[in-house]
Length: 147
Ligand code: DQA
Image 1 (cartoon, rainbow, N blue to C red):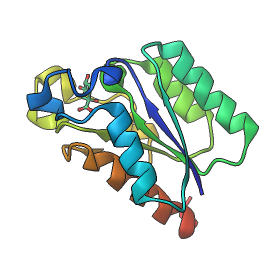
Image 2: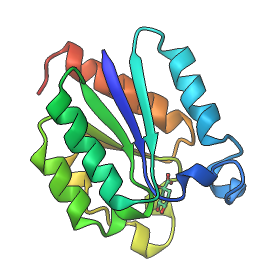
Image 3: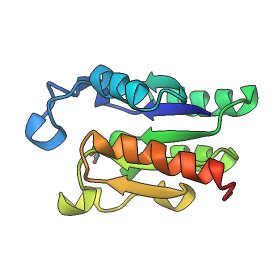
């Protein structure tokens, strides 16, 4: 099983950035813990501040083949990027939307996700565990051939 864990803008700052909201783990910590927790999964980890690079990454893994799905924390792009939404629609791989914080318990502008409707599901509010739950959801989908 091969999974891309894709992180968008500002997630490179985890550990330093608003720890009361996002916790004290760095993105490297989170990625390492994922690899340790799911030894049977082959992970690729990619983060960018650049929307276009995230889109290109999605197209690249779709075209390359061999991947089973994507766990995506799109950061603020979640709330406004129609380009990201269209890119998710344009690929056939299942994408699970994850957030560290509970976006529905925060500012109103975060309550709207423009990508949720084209993702297979959303996990929000469980801190770093959101990524683990996202991987588990993806593994179940792939195993049960639900898509
Ligand atoms: C986030 C929530 C977004 O609203 C925010 O812009 C982020 C992080 C989260 O993981 O909780 O950058 O996606």
